[in-house]
Image (cartoon, rainbow, N blue to C red; front, side, top):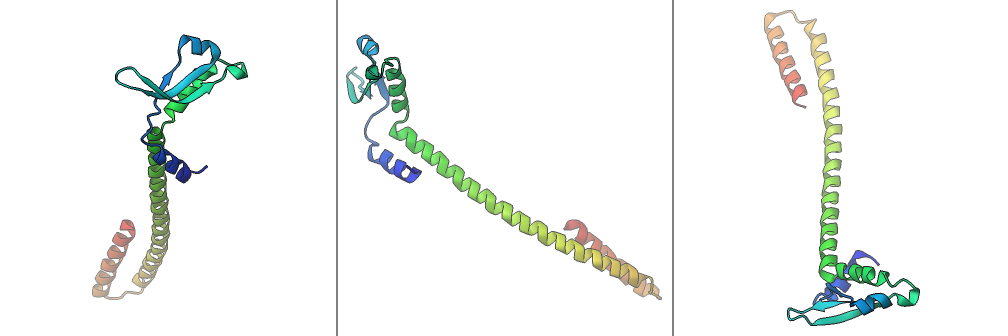
Length: 151
């Protein structure tokens, strides 16, 4: 059963109050327990009857009943909502990771290009003859270095 089916079932029985457990002393000895709803006036409306006495494990009736009561529709819907939220968050994180990987790759390529530009500028620098050309090249190198550092 998948979460969609479980969610549909939980929604279908949402109005049923399946949160309380009852086991009388006599029931305990026989391996009988009930899941249902305890009203404000003390009336217990049982919906599920558990009988583990036939399996020679009377002590398990209360355990199974408690488990069924804990797995009530509201609890299931809350767990499914948490799961769906976690799945949405995971998808968003994976998309962010992919985006960051692409940006790192682009920055790496940019860094290579900036490095080549610096190498070219240094080679050109060796051939410069006037102070004016030298200043222009120094300014260009500073800009490329600044961009490289930002990347």
